[in-house]
Image (tube, rainbow, N blue to C red; front, side, top):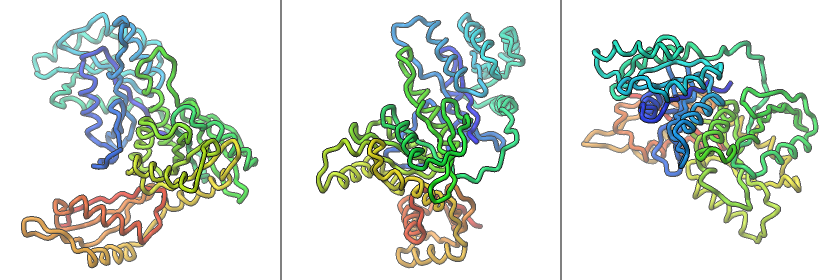
Length: 436
């Protein structure tokens, strides 16, 4: 099930980005020093008391040559359209303004849960002024300080209390995969062509992701799949200057609701920066990834065209070195019948479990072939490893001092694990732990 979405809304200069960074700083899903993983700062993962959610910062919207009122209205509209819970941020130093009241009027009509937060309450003397904001009509205002991190715990308690109920989740053994990508890369055509090839459609049901449709089908081999069509992931209208909010948010929800992600590229247009942003989130979310190059029939080819394009993908998407690449055509149906089988294969790798004894044999052999590094006369000692999770496969490696594990040696161990076990299509996570 997709994570709830929390939006931080308010007029400019109330500290939205500061609060966003504070909350996101509690948990960023994966941190890697890897070129190409671009984090667009309008969104992040957050977590509080075991509840995960997606966080939106609406502060990045700037409308040139537009009235101030229109700018704050558009910020609120993004939150209304996408969020499950809204943090309405105001500023105690400026006091309640007409702009705050106009945002409040828009939020009244949203029928979305709104938690009111009064920022920049940096000292006790200011607390008495917080109650002036009761008149906005959103109940108790929460005193916080983004600069010092004060009061965020109480605020997040109120936020997660307003999350929608999970309800009763029906058992679903099908493999869920989504198609994501820029507009005009052929996602809808691929969806229709894949269904046309398999033809055994079980049902069409509205998905949990807005503007996405979950379609269940059975392949010719009898395997059940749920395909998440994200054809609606596109820039919405010219009224918004920074409309990537919509595209990224819908991609995030589709990814969170999937086991495997098909990253669709357009062979005619090549690779764009927006492709890398979307694919980077799939990688960070820990989903299995398959790179699909569509419209391959439209390209003039020689004996090196496919290899050259694959080399370009590997260069631009270095963090997706584990992802298989398939060249297809929705028009000619080229290789489309192979997609469900590849999805199943990647899903098998994504859910693979390795026995601890077998894993440790691989780790010890790797250390014997390439001894552990030392620092300041102290050598890294790796004691043992164990797998603690799947989707993606996650391993905890116990050692004498995590500071001695250089990034390059960690990558070496990951490569040796990949060499010993087939993890094609899925990221794997290594967690370092010091054993006393």
